Image (cartoon, rainbow, N blue to C red; front, side, top):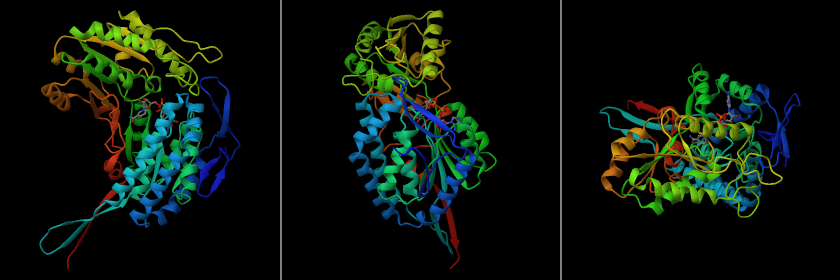
Length: 475
Ligand code: NAD
């Protein structure tokens, strides 16, 4: 695979010849090297994007939509190859990688349709002809994380292109190959050169170059709250538009009326995808005291039965965590919880599959957890389930909202009053009621509070890439 940067029509290495290694997190084998680019390569990518914008913005939305649909077909046709690249550099089981490619592809038709429906409106003012138009914001940048390297990119790229914008993409340094392969395929499918560009490398210099260039009008970022703040500060000078999809700390409330089978199904689905390295994964399980013991027993049992191993092996449920820092954080959180009075219901150790790295923590269920423990405030981003029992709905909602984050939240209940209460009061941008996978391409996705702002998905994602312009004419 050609791993050079994609800049307009060209494939360019890092100008100073520096490279970054991409390692397989399951084995530490070298998968590839990619350019360790800096400000100059970033500037060239912005040049290519700015020049492509002058044509792309004038392409009728219906023609842009055709290109997006062709790209979606290409992703589905090439799913196996992309899934194996994704699993190799990221670690997740192949079945999850395949599902990620399908999820990524699903953003393209949704954005294509929303792009075609961008309407010009008229406002009725006596004596005037007033039109309200939507224009693409221009050159944008996408900065994506390693946990869903293709899906997070498609979420940004599809609405940007549908709106008539162009993009400079900086994939996460752990998983650049997926981003390169995604864009390569898009260009083969007919996206004009320069509409999507990829620059790989250590993040600081590339990010700073994007922030400093006044031609970049918007950055869509998915990643940590800390880097989101950095981009917001750095974007102030150019009054940059931002969409910040930041960290989460999702609560899952199992109400008194919950069906236990369903509660376990939702918990397993939401928690263990990508070995818990998912921003909308539940970080706190609040369980009504009457269901608590049975819930814990069954969750511990189901979690213990998950199989760890290389993502490309059949029957594997949990791949490795992305790196040693991620593993250390998981054990820090477990140790901290135990030191503050929590108990282990299952797991707590390492799996160490033979011949692989030691990045396979056991799926772990912790009892008697609560505020004051690190796992209650920081994203663990691993296969750890902190559980706490509650006695009434007030207490559950109060505990659920005790977080600065507000990305996702879950509830298991069929009680209409509880469902309305959750919809009204739970501090989260995405709420799953009996639904462990609430994120689909046609609905808005994004957080509130320290989980950021801006929405991806559906027409909401496209609207984020448009400027609203008023043209007032006196006839
Ligand atoms: P991170 O913030 O360290 O990295 C995310 C991206 O930002 C990477 O591409 C990285 O290279 C880049 N980056 C880092 N420093 C930068 C800088 N100074 N300037 C510009 N770019 C910079 O996050 P991570 O630890 O790699 O990813 C996990 C985080 O992402 C978690 O907090 C998770 O919750 C969050 N996440 C959020 C969503 C969402 O939709 N809200 C989805 C997935 C992941």
